[in-house]
Amino acid sequence: MTRLRNRFGSLLLSVIALSTGGGAFAQPTAYPVKPVRVVVGFAPGGPADIVGRLVAPKITEILGQQLVMESRGGAGGTIGMDVVAKAPADGYTLGLGSSGNLIVAPHLYPKIGYSVAKDLSPVASLATTAFVIAVNPSVPAKTTAELVKIAHTKKNALSYGTSGNGSSSHIAAELFRNAIGAEFVHVPYKGTGPALTAVVSGEIDMMFGDLIPALPHAQSGRLRLLANLGSHRSPAAPNLPTIAEAGVKMQPMSGRYAFVAPAGTPREVIAKLHAAIAAVLKSPETQQRFIQAGFEVVNDTPEQLAATLKNEGELIGAVIRKAGIKAE
Image 1 (tube, rainbow, N blue to C red):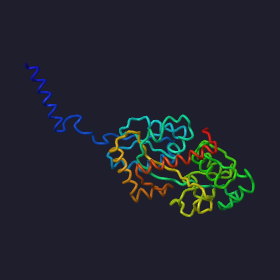
Image 2 (cartoon, one colour):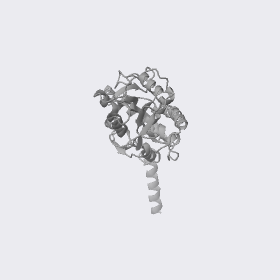
Image 3 (tube, rainbow, N blue to C red):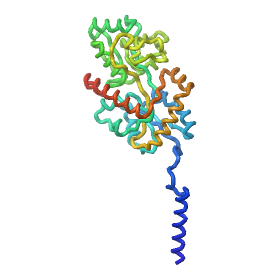
Image 4 (cartoon, rainbow, N blue to C red):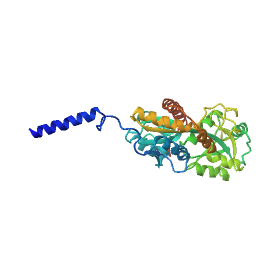
């Protein structure tokens, strides 16, 4: 009888605790209660890593928990994004993706291991960076129009470098080539750095690539920038005309960097992350730091990011199929 009363008393205390909010399952635990891992699918020091480190300290202040950057490079950024796609959907693993592993790679690698639409939840875009046409000063073209004239006059007279077959820079080159109806000699390199070194040294004539690493060489006179392939001028290079202003009708292209989470991450967690990111991106200090680093802030909603990834993915997929581009 005593044992029965003790069991009844324990049960009663449990019911009281639950009803007053004292039980383990009374309310969902506040988020976040521990550090948040941010997986970057590229090497430290690259554009994606730079973008993440520009915002991580301020987001940490708002959330009250540290954002821990973790580089998992390889296979065009897909190794790191695959880690994110397969992580628990609890908000404690995020991916900092780029156009490479969110837009290009799904159409390039047949066995990528994840679906952007099914396995990832968009959180927020952070920034974009311009793609530019950069030529060695020995190339006689001073403008894009002059470059087009050379390309039409002598077939395969000009060589261009990219950061690899199927890379974003390769896609940008194909968009330009298709728009002007000319042929170039493609020389793929293992990364933006080697391609940039090659064009600066004169090993190749030009490259289609990120503005960020090319800008210092242009400022020193070792490169000549002809056009920004984006839809509008970059704050980091306001005097550089867009490809449309240069007289070429082509689909604009720029590099994008964004936060994503594993699919199924609770909406309230996504909302809290987005609010923190948006607050940081609205800061004039943050915007100025992005411009100085060669980026342009993008402050969109998860829904807008999802639409962008879908639309740009369809465009890039069509380019890859038409050109028969294969991963290295």
